[in-house]
Length: 287
Image (cartoon, rainbow, N blue to C red):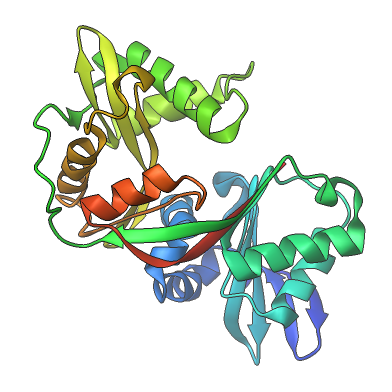
């Protein structure tokens, strides 16, 4: 039995997807794996059951074919969305905002935010931070930068210092602390380490550099959480460390991607030096 209808729009119609739609949804996502790795990773791991995934995924169909979808969770992510599907998502989502962010390719992500703000106002228009231009970058070969042999996978024995560094990174990057009473961020960091997706330099119980694989699907992974101890910045340490992260990631995923704020010129230049090339533009709306 296919997912239930969530309304119609012009020639297209909305439907809440379920596990009967897995093959069609994954085919749509993997047509553009670099830009869709976040949603593809989540669906590949948990399927399309809202209980297991933690949110609904709404599909937009034309003539019975899935042409777009929207991950409607804490991260609101439109995929392969055009004007008609975005209008349908805006009506479906309604005036009550549950998302903590809107993210994805810049044009549809920003159009979704603007449409929600104009249609419903309220919580949708009250933004904490808008990042409209975030270069999406990738590398699919070895970095030309010499490696830092100290970079390695983090173990759970190093959880405490790594967690401390992760909190510092998150607070610096997002502008708020990730710590809250439920302990979800702590569990997230522990899970990342357990999956072999946390990398860093640890000396004398102190994390000097860290980086994580935030999501992965097929041949693509996406790196996040890159952080170098402020006391060590400006000394040329970041590029060799990142080159080593690329090497370690490419043992499992041939293509390593990331996205970065365009105003963070030092970071953009760092990734270019390591060998990343721009592949598009993301945008993030933070609430």
